[in-house]
Length: 490
Image (cartoon, rainbow, N blue to C red):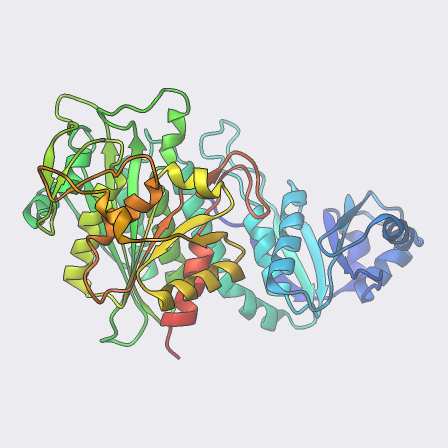
């Protein structure tokens, strides 16, 4: 697993700046005002820092800008990065400013002087989040180790504030690693094994094998994986940090480790991207890791359905009818609409076993959501305004794009089948909505529920503010915050 960059916290020691051989980061506000550390560096550089800032201010100098002085005179540092950031920066500004530092660090150690910056903990988290590289299959091995040292007025206070944020970064790294991993490595068995390793963090982890799934009646889930040599599994993770008898929040993830489309085979072009079709399960895993690392005072269960969708002589066919764990029958018109077949059984099992206070499923479910929302927002579907509003608030606070989409009877009617209780697709119009309507049929009355279609945000072709190209870890931060806001006690 990719380990987040080590972070140290120390008191500000001005004299160490001159001798530091890595990169130095300082903060200057939009008016060019410098704190003690910046003024010291300015003196060491014989006024070069001030002149560079003043020149930049004449052109453009606004919050979030970064100015770099390479090999400044009078110092051993290879570079000084000057951030334009107000001393009372909000979480988003601080996090994004830190990400700029994480991106620029490269192989070097980074020394950051934050003084009394209010958003310092979020700046640290941003630096760590952006300083990620998936190198497990590079022959050159892991990237050279480096550290981030943060100098501030009260190191112990900042370290305590940053600790839960760094736990979330750790969980995000797990999600990214899982989504980036190729399918020949991340089989259903390997995925389950990696989740089982989190027992050492205090999670209770169970792996349900095919025989148990058959006994439970999870025929729609098993149908998806029956064409693959990889066994289908359901992994149950429990974190019990809240009140003993409090109903848990349930997180459910689609874990299709590779999706060929089955007999309804996808086009060859772009099929290599289907290693990320387990993104929902990856996010659930990352959230559970983050909650365990920060010892969240909440009860949360995470369940993931792990399958591989392959064409073979045993694969499910278009036209087949399968019975779900709930008892409803599904006419399979397209074997590439498989994620909903995995989720519906796991959702029903979750409600039967745990009677959750709320249920949130995540899936790279439809290409239609990308047509509607692009790569900026996940699609949010819900039957409960209070839970949905709380999630959207959490996502906004964490700068994770999310947009609520509609549900309704007209869309639900598009799933009617002449030979079964429902079809697994409703046609091209409103494809992401009819997929959500399919899932809603497996939500019990009285269960607050959110469906998150993350097809457009789980993995990107270009770098984002907080992640390099590839897996983003979208949802770990937002769901962690939702737990903190709505489900934690004390």
